Length: 83
Image 1 (cartoon, helix red, strand yellow):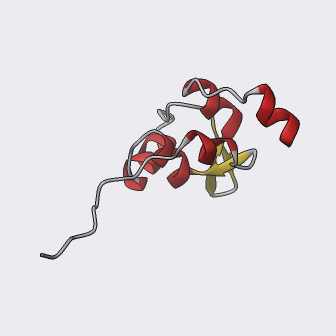
Image 2: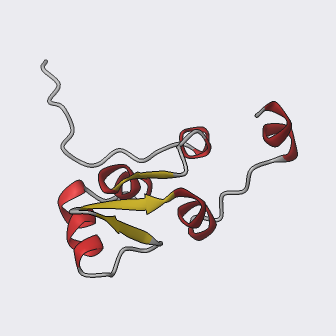
């Protein structure tokens, strides 16, 4: 029996999200929301991404703090002291 690789986007864990830098690429931001990169870039270009996206030159960056807020991910006090 062979197993084909899934083409569905894989989400990110809370740990993955908390380890992101202050901004991240649109593909990673899309992954956090469970969407593929094509849809994520389309929403970013159209100003419809579910959290704050800033345009830097010709590229887009997802603001991690806003993404965490929208996803209701809070850094625990234990995580904050480890940083």
